[in-house]
Image (cartoon, rainbow, N blue to C red):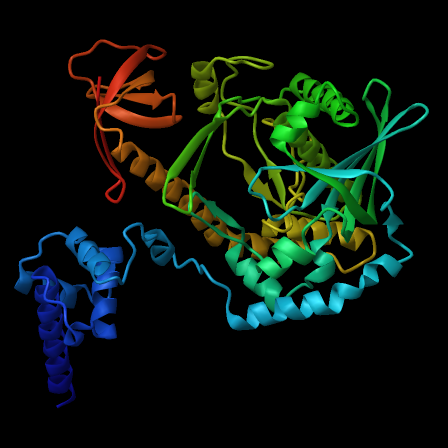
Length: 514
């Protein structure tokens, strides 16, 4: 009897699903056409997971009775019913990435903000008071979460360079409600049309953000340089800091060559990079393509030169801070989340190479970075040890390393190797999914842009040749794709013009011909 009832319920759902689908296909909209939540789930998850869906057989039965052959028709009907948006981010559902914060997390963030509003950290006698030091932030125009700042003080025999990171671990205690949620997320996710922060905005954009004029707790790396910008020594301290000026990369670029300390900081960054290059660092200088979606739905695309002065400046300062914090952990025999990289399989050039083709080829010769609890050489960056700790608002790995440094400074107990290894395993999936999510969403909006460019001719470069196709790079978008060989005789490095024949963002399709 139980089995009969179960079968009857199943058949009833299939019948109701069939009716709903037919009404939607025939555009019969009325009050009785609201979809049953159970049927909605069956159709949604069949579109998302197809045969892997637990109710795939029921979904197939519904589709068979209505003559629907493609799962893409399910998406179209759900959009028509205003259940999904035409640009719905399906990967968020597929990867089970939470886009919102639960109410209890928001409430906890509010409580932290209220409790810390009296600046207790300012009364800490062990914190170095650096509020009179002129700190600046340099970030993108749309940045709302500021986690790092830079300072430069002229001394009699040289300079004191400061890289200051917000002390997130002061606000968020190990294994509390917010910390557990952040660990499950692993990292912030930045997409052309959305941002999913690792921490609630009340923290990431307010209390834990280095906002101009606000006093904040920090972890400061203070580096003594001689007048030739060579490092003499360094120290890492808990600090109390205040941002005196926030500027964008564009504003900083304008000041380089005219204004101190920006000009001097740029000179110091240049010397630091030259040292890394002498140590064997591989400097890939491929442009970055930035994609964003305006409020009105317009897609914006711009190429960013990673070699522009202010970006190079910030990059070098963060590499210096991360390598020194890694050395600090190693010198105190404290484990951390270290990144290492073996020597490249082959070196195609040394120093800075502007040629895009050579940079693409050199990038293919690099090994993937390795994450572990012991400091090892990072050949790609040209440093003996490397541990990211400059973005504790955005990356949980960085928050872990910040806690390890705080352990050395006497603020909390550092994690053991076993604890770190467990967290690294736990973070592997969410961090990996976040990377895939960012890549795929960026690809989606690029293809949406290319949908409007049908028939356009673009310059491309051949990266590799195979029996039936060529691997190419569309230079304007730094997009690697394939084109059929079609009897052409091309070799890697050749420049060609390709025409966009067809693009479909939802199906991840792009057809090109030369």
